[in-house]
Image 1: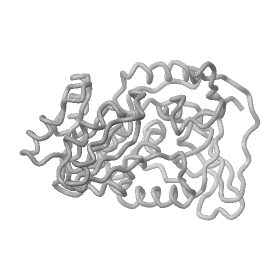
Image 2 (image 1 turned 90 degrees about the vertical axis):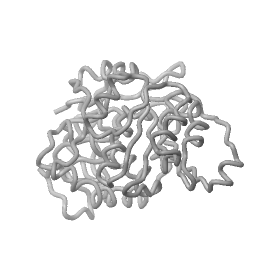
Image 3 (image 1 turned 180 degrees about the vertical axis):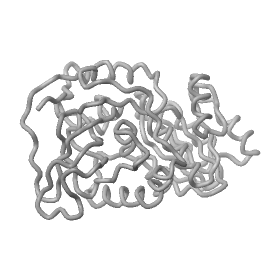
Image 4 (image 1 turned 180 degrees about the horizontal axis):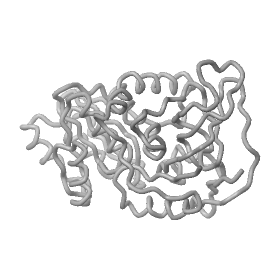
Length: 323
């Protein structure tokens, strides 16, 4: 089958086309005939925690049809329309753990379905499972136009919370307001805390989802309300270190936590997927929120899709149509 591998050379991730054997399911796994997959920046950042070694088949989410099921898998049958976190989804067929399989809502295209699993479940963990955002609270998202950023804003809508997002592009902020962002702050600098305080009438944000990295982490702390939480989800700025004002953390009872798929145990992955299916998927099924697809590329255009991602021009997810 055709596939694209992520190969690290000279500290840079490149895409390499290869013909490989079709995967076979082990116990507890399924094979999906992939209709579409989506790009995720963490998989392509060399030196991050998600990249996964010197070479691997790329793609960690997919939509498509169940092709085969492994031993012990029940309730999932060949021909089912599914989406989920996967392994090797930049290919005609991909593996998926049975506990990651989600039904594709009737309202979604294959491309919208492919844009759903990873970013929405990551945002669900950051905003709901660990962030504990509540109705009426304020969410701050730095780098709000990313896939996980858009999903965080949409999940906050479902919860009845208010949202503030930062971006260096006024055009992106306008697009984000169309999908539910309440307040946009145009900046790429760590200078947004005063505006957050102003918008929240001095209180600060209850939860900050930091998708930018160390360069804005101290400012996220300055923007927090008492008992505020901050989720570290990415570091597109390449800054893995940041100063922490321990006195502010101490006095205000701040909570700091990370969200990454790199070291998740199977039972943790299953728990997050179950929670997303229970709490957020119904809002997608009803059409209350819709996955945001920035642009769709063909399979042969995957290197161009990677270049588009690295240009930071997108709002939402970049999708690759495979079948």
